[in-house]
Amino acid sequence: MSSQTLNIILFGETGVGKSSVINLIAGSPIAKTSPDADGCTMRSQSYEFNVGSRGIKIWDTVGLEEPQMGVNGYYTAIVNAYALIHKLHDAGGVDLLLFCIRGSRITTTIQSNYRLFYEILCDKQVPIALVITHLERENPMEDWWKRNQSSISKYGIHSAGHACVTGIVDRGEKYKESKDAILRLLSQHDNRGRFSMPPEPWLARFFRGLASLFSLGTPAGKDIARILTKRCGLDPETAYSLARRLEVDKNAGT
Image 1 (cartoon, rainbow, N blue to C red):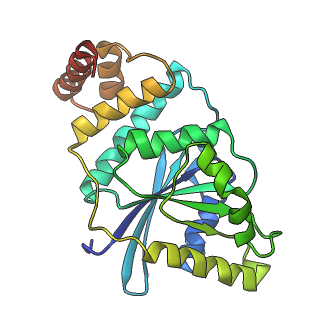
Image 2: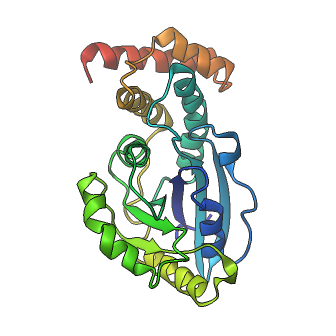
């Protein structure tokens, strides 16, 4: 993969139109399915293509559907995060977060997704940009941003750019405007500040952050080790080493 490739995590709630956003960027219908279908938080599907001479790699990633998560959902998120973090590490890290939100009201789930990806997964080290979708009835589409920018900020959601779009191909001029808007947004970002961590500490901080987000408390090390060995296929020695790391961090109050 070229060092000039822009590595992007694309996330948002089910039905927000992430596949359409990928197709908008790529200029062709390459994303016909979505990992949202199974609704498992942090499950991802990757797409790699060029826009002109620039390489783009996008991980279409399932966000949260509800502002609350039980223990079973937490463990499923761990399994999926384990796979995603290793893929990101192997690709050299993350350059940009694209947060897709529907052009309607801001919800607690949107807030939780912002925290999950920007604060917990990427440690506030990766710029995050908003893609506002389903704006085909807005004329001009940018008016949505003018009306809602201050409200978004009040909810604690801050961005390094935005694009107001429609993913409906037969919208003609609006579709072209959408493509121009999102490519203009991507042109403002590069990979010079790429964020990455070794997988084990990256995964450990994700565990802690996810538990804190939902006030679950850090699960027992033996439960984490069991999940990592049985569902992630990690060898027992590595799994227990990571579980012990979590126990030490928890006891130290970090």
